[in-house]
Length: 230
Length: 266
Figure 1 (spheres, rainbow over the protein chains, first blue to last red):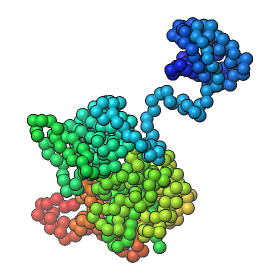
Figure 2 (cartoon, one colour):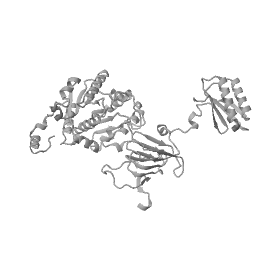
Figure 3 (cartoon, rainbow over the protein chains, first blue to last red):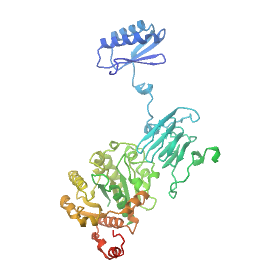
C-alpha cells in the first residue's frame, strides 16, 4: 500500500487534486476515473473550482481531466487550473502544532479567546523531562508533568496529576488564562507574560490540595478551588 | 584577559557537571567574574546542580537563534555575586547549536567575564564539538576506572586534533583506601596512560551527593574533602602552585585514634 496515485481534497466548492510528479498521465487518468466511480456521486450537481498540484499539466491534459470530472461526477467544472501552493500552504487543511518561535515574531493582536469553551487538547500520560507539549487552545494533561518538562498552551492548562515542570498558560498573552492541577508545585509558572517561581526557602509542601493559579494585577494568585476546602 | 575552559570527559557520570559547578563557584568566590555554559542540550543538569532551574526563562538555543540577547539568558547565581549561568535548552535537540555559534557566543562573553566554563555533554558527537569549539583550555575529567580512562584518552586525542592545547586531567572519585589495597587504579597508573598534566584529584565524597541534590556546590563546604580538592583545582587554574593533597590522610592521627576507639575509619 503506497500513497495513492491521486488524492482528492475538498474545501467548500474547491476540489483539489493532488498528484505525483513521477506518475504518467494515463495512470493518473485511470486513477481519477476509478475514484470518481466510487465517490463521484458526492459531487453530483455541484459546481466545482478544480485545482491541481504535484504535477504540471498542459492545456490538453487539463481539458481531458475536466471533462472526465464533469462526466463522471455530473458536476459542473467552473474552472480548472494549477494550484498556487505558495498562496495556500499544504498544511492549511490539516492541523499543525503551533510554532512558538514564529508566533513570537508575529505580534498577535488577538489572543486565544476560547477559555470558557474552545479548542482543547487532551494529553494522556506523563509529560517527562525534555518533552514539550503545546497547543493553540486549552490543554488538559491526564497524568503528571515532571521537572524539566514544558507544558505550553494559549488557553488554560489543567493537569490531572502532579504539576512539577514548567507551565505556561495564555502563552499568546491572555492574562485570563488559568493553571489548575491536583498538586500544583511547578518549577516555574507563567501566565501570559507574568513569570513566577516558588520561593527558594520552601521545601516540598505537605498535604497538597488541588489548586488553581490565576493572574490579577500582574500577580499570580494560587488558591484551592474545591468548595469544601475554602 | 579572559579564558574559555571546557570541562569534558567522554564518558558519562564521571562528574563533569559537578566539577563545572564547583570550579565555577570557586572562581567566583575568589573574585573572578565567571559564567557557566551548559551545552548538554536535551539533558541539561547544571541548572539543577546549581539550584537555578526555576529561574530559567531563556536558554542557550534562544541566544544562538537570536530570540533574546545574551544578557537576558544570563542567570545570576542566588548565592554568589559574579557567578552566572547560561542553561541548555531542555526540549530541543543538540543540532540546534552549531560550533560557529558557540565561538561567537564565547567571544561575546569574553568581553564581560574573566572565566567562561563550558560544561560538555557526554559523548563525542555534535554536543562535544559545540562545547570545545570556542575553548582555549580543557579540563578532562576521569574516574579511576578502565572504561573512564579509555574514554578520556579518546577525548584527549580529539581535543589535540581540534587544537585545544594542553588539556589538564582531573581525577574524580578516587578512593584512597581502595588504591592502597590495589583494587583501584592509582593516579600514577592513570597518568602513565594519559600522559597529560594533572590539575587535581578529588576524593570520593558522600557530601557531593548531598550538595548536588540540594543545589549547593560542595566547594563552599569547608569540612568537605572534595570541596578542599576543588578549591585547590581553582587555585591551579589561576596559575598558583598548590601541592596535591595527601591521599593517605586516613593513616593520620585522627583515623588511627578512631580505629582504636572502634569507629570506622574512612
